Structures are given as C-alpha cells and as structure tokens.
Image (tube, rainbow, N blue to C red; front, side):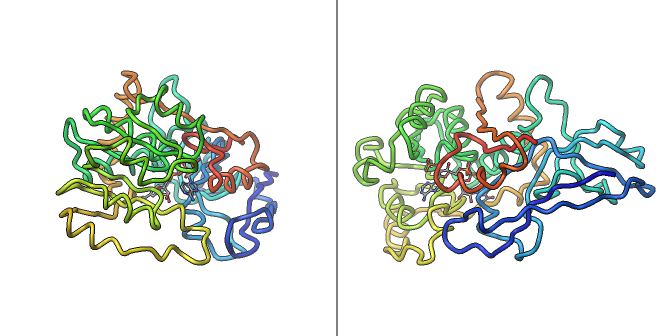
Length: 326
Ligand SMILES: NC(=O)c1ccc[n+]([C@@H]2O[C@H](COP(=O)([O-])OP(=O)(O)OC[C@H]3O[C@@H](n4cnc5c(N)ncnc54)[C@H](OP(=O)(O)O)[C@@H]3O)[C@@H](O)[C@H]2O)c1
C-alpha cells in the first residue's frame, strides 16, 4: 500500500502565513492502477509567492508544481522512470488518470531536474517572456529589477546582461547583493532594507531607468516609475510586498509619472506564454550550457519542512529558487 503525505490549507491566510495555516494529512492510495493511470512520486516540489496570493479554499491540498518520477504505470506512453513536471500540489504521491496533462521533463544532462521548477520552468519563462516582451531591452539601456535575488529576478538581471544592458538590482541582504554583483555580474546592487529607494536609484542609476521589472509592488512601483527615462518600459510581474498586508499601500497613484515619462507599463504572466515556452526553454538551456546563465537554488530537505520553506519566501530566506527535496 502507498501512503501519500499531503499538506492541507487548514485555515485561510491572514497576514503573514505561519504554521497554524497548515496541517499534514496522509492518504492511502490503491495498490492497483486502472488502465491508463500512473503513480507519480514527488522528487522536488516548488514553493512560490502565488500560493499566498491565490490560495486554495481551506480544507484543500495546497496547490503547486512538482517534479515527479513515475513509479508505477499502466500507460505505455509514460513508463516507469519517466520524469514529469506538473501541478500536482503539495503531496508526495499522486495517481494520475490522465497523464497527457503531465509534462515530460526534457533531458537536462548533468543539470538538476529541479530546474524544471525554476530557470527551466515557470519562473524562468516568466522572466524570459515577461522581460523581453514587455521591457524590450536595448543594448546600453539601464534596467532595474527588484527582489533581484529571487527566482524570477535573478534571471531577469542575467538576461538583461546578455542583452548588453546596465543592470541595477535590489535585494534584502548584503549576502544577496554580493551574489548578484560578484556571482551574476550585476553592475549595481543595493540592499533595500538599509538604503532608501530614491537615494539608491540616484546613486546607482544616475542616468535614469529605461526598463523596470517589478516584483515588489506597492508604493515602490510609483517611486521607481518617477525615476524612469522618457518612453521607458515597465513589466509588472508581482507585488510581494503587498501579499501579506491587511492594509495595502495607499501611496501616490502611478499615472503622473506614467504620463510625464510617457511610459509603457504592462502586466505580465508567465503562463500566458506557455505555447512559446519550448522556444524560451531551448534558449535558457543553451545559455546555461554556455555558462552565460547561472542558476542557484535554496534546497530545503524533507517534505515535512515544506511549510517553513514557504513561509521563508516572505522573509527572504531563499536565494534563487526555493526548492523542496523530498
Ligand atoms: N506574473 C507572473 O507570472 C509571476 C510568476 C512568478 C512570480 N511572480 C511574482 O514575482 C515576484 C517574485 O517571485 P519569485 O518567484 O521570484 O520569488 P521568490 O524566489 O519566492 O523570492 C521572493 C523574494 O522576494 C523578496 N521579498 C519578500 N518580501 C518582500 C518585501 N516585502 N519587499 C521586497 N522584497 C520582498 C525576498 O527577498 P529579499 O531578501 O530580497 O527581501 C524573497 O526572497 C513575486 O511578486 C511573485 O508573485 C509573478
């Protein structure tokens, strides 16, 4: 008999998530699969900020992506040993009756399969298509990206460097800033917890910002738009500073700087481009193999520790992609 462990949203979120929002349950799965079914055994799971923004109803299994190995199969298209990536939720084992919905993880060679949850998955493709299509970066332009040491931000900054831009990034610790500058080649970095934004942008982007990739939101968004050059482009990717706030920021509206600087501000979503992901994944893999794109993961060991990895996203515990290894 296979016993699946699963994390349930026990109580609706209110403010910062904590352990009381979750409970673990077990579920016995049948030994015999029906024709066409497969049993997926999670290897890596992902925690992402959207799980706080779009919560499942209380009492449901937390949603999320995982990389899993097919450990039993009654489907010849998905034999035992196939590695798949899918939105199976926070659970260790899942019987899937329609495996055509599973994505086979392409051969990544020596690279970790967990990349299918990061640079070679949703965060990477959000960075790739969101940045390139909304910000249209040009050689020599200045790019500012916040939450720059997170899963999406670090890739945006690296793509911007590949495109010949000057890259300014902000993050919440000296250690993260050091990695962005020395590890990834960002031109300028600042710790937003110790340096006021206005001063930081004046010091690090005195020529103004042409492209802004916004992961943080709230008042910061308007304040960056004020510092943008004429006809600049901004990609609104997320607003992690607001997800846990009962009272959202009520600062100045962004329309003044949008008008005065003639900005193009576009909301972006990684999933929107899913039909084009193969093209983006091919390019990302090539950059990784060429050494132009580096990846970093903060790996939490053990399914039982998944909740603390998730909570940690909101206090900046992760550098690069937060991954859970079962
Ligand atoms: N539109 C889309 O399709 C899409 C897809 C993926 C992600 N997103 C959004 O993109 C953003 C980044 O996601 P991600 O997956 O890269 O995140 P991540 O890897 O989970 O990293 C989140 C980082 O955000 C920073 N952070 C947390 N609270 C903050 C606050 N109050 N102010 C400033 N920074 C804060 C933390 O780093 P520090 O130590 O630097 O604070 C944390 O490590 C989120 O807003 C997310 O919702 C959108």
